[in-house]
Amino acid sequence: MAASSPVAACGVGSYHVIDKKDLGKAVVYLMYNGTTNCVVTWKDTTDDVNVGAYIRPAGGTSRTEYDDYKYYAGPVKVNAPGQCISWGGVYGGDTSSTNLWYISPMEHCD
Image (cartoon, rainbow, N blue to C red; front, side, top):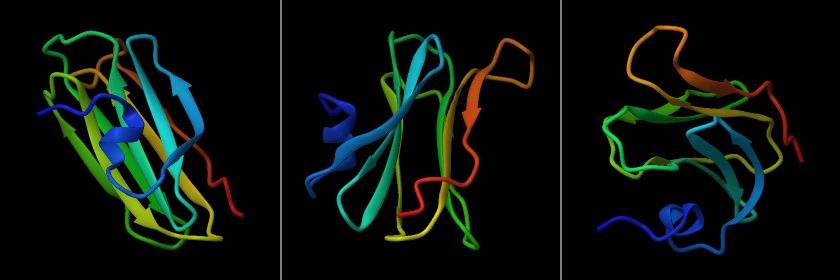
């Protein structure tokens, strides 16, 4: 069963949106609950185009989810309080210029 919102997709834990990036046909949401960051890429339509979510803490390993999800990709989470993170997402199914994507610099460090 699909979640009703990007915040709900992150699950239990009082998440709130701290940043977002509009990709045109999807929106990448960065959420935080005081200890854990969560990224969800939420599609505007229920098409068959692949969608992905990405997060990486400074000095850590990235976590990604990418497939032909109907509603959203994610959640991808990292427990990194006080650490900088890079986050982002993609809407698109190949490496062509029609992909809509975003990867942030290391940010949200506090």
